[in-house]
Length: 393
Image (cartoon, rainbow, N blue to C red; front, top):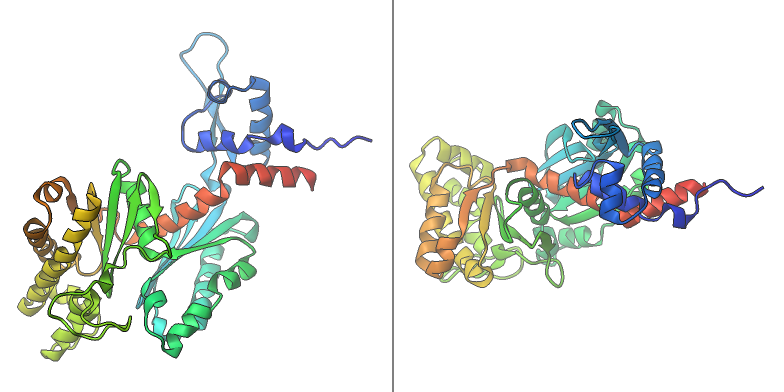
């Protein structure tokens, strides 16, 4: 007896149908047929496949037009979930999202990356399991994981702790645990992606600057993350600052991190008698109006602004969005940055760029991680492969 399963050829371009519905570019069979250049019957067959897999839902009928109303369809963001984490040097943000990147569960976790990768893996698994349980999502609804990691773990010196991070198969361990793809990238790249898609989608050249314990930036050009030849583009925290020789974790001296990073500010304030140790505590002091902290934050803005001015001359960005503990310390940080940029950058480029506090805030990195999972797993080719495999099972 001949098989009744659809052939791969008959299922081709199912992913394109989903993509058009997901982006809101079409909503009826007629819309899809006209856009794709296919017969309505062919589009109907593909919609039926997506309906069976729960990726598409009916959302009523068209109204106001002559003739028979047409059924309307939409992407079903509730069809599955992603797991997202934004790992910092001293804390971690975690979320379960749906396939529209809406946060269903959220948690802040205090960590110390100095405890090593096994400890981080244990925390990721424990909290992710709790998140999945709380939203009632079983393993079959999980599409993938997005994990943003601080770049400094890759470029620190040659100690045994650094070697442990470099050799540890974090992504592979998580893939084995959840049986789903894991997408890992530098935290600033996920920050940049989430912020760009949410707040500045029309910016052609977009920089997202992280000013926390350490300093780094992510770059988006024409909607795409630019990572550089080895994935380390944007590590401006390791730019040499004139007349400074403080030792840095990368093995060099006088890096921007050692002068204007949150950890450096905390160390200087601690040396002046303040019982603080972290960038978050620096921000809290500045927000309380403690003069020494306010001065440190503003001067850090100037020093970072000097370095960013070089990036402005090189890249001519539309927007620089700033995120992190230092920018949360009132207006003084951005005031200091703006002063340095106007003093140092090419005037026409300085006037053209918008410098702003990150509108999306702490959750931008989580959104970027979730979007990365969604865009890879719901890519048209991936969907075509999925429905073909499912039909053959």
